[in-house]
Length: 315
Image 1 (tube, helix red, strand yellow):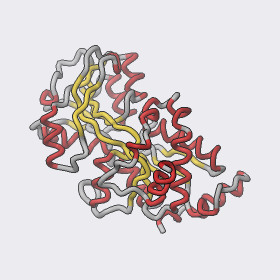
Image 2 (cartoon, one colour):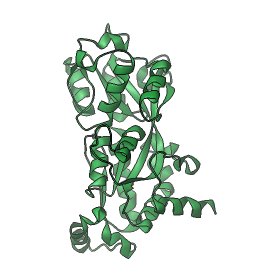
Image 3 (cartoon, one colour):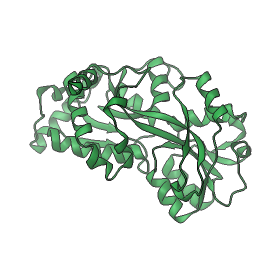
């Protein structure tokens, strides 16, 4: 019963705060949300979702800072978090027990939320123009146990760049931003929604460029891995960049453990969709949540509680 690991803690918090769960089934779970680095969309989205859950359901909810998708999936699979944000490719690896996961995790999807975009960020005045120019450079390919690190390695490989030829700083987004401001790295990879708050703030103080990711590389990554990716573009104007830049997009899921009670997942989705407009005022990516698209989470199965929710809403 992975989802019951934190029962005692949850009940203690409820007793201390005078709150009571919306329904008895919430006694078997916890409303901890595995987010990501505090400068990314996951954490921002998670913080607002936690607030909405607390108000609507009368349960304690909070977002946790984590290392990203791989870390989030492990926490949800182990019952350390009720909900988690995860890239579709990392989630596909988790249920298959491959890549960063030694064995399959008991993960199910609650919703497809929005697409994330692969950022390869350099200073505007850098002499790095292409991903192939990163050889021998100081570049962060993402933090350990992050989905960023998974995608960065796959893209480099597709572009014909040996990841070992890059001096990988292994930084999370906040650390990457700090290192770029200090001139300690030549670039960094990030995978997130548009705009990612930390990068948007950085672009206001330091002119940036985004390196292109070619469609052929996207096709290569799809052929080698989970076919979870699609070609896309950064629109002109994002982060102050004056022209569109080709990139790769990957869907983002809200995930739960397989043994989470159906009614809990149903409640979460009730709140998630009801709060969409309010959350989107602070987190633009939340506006992309769409009931028709939310069910497309293959190869990660929808949780039965999610299936019931979408059927109920369809009428």
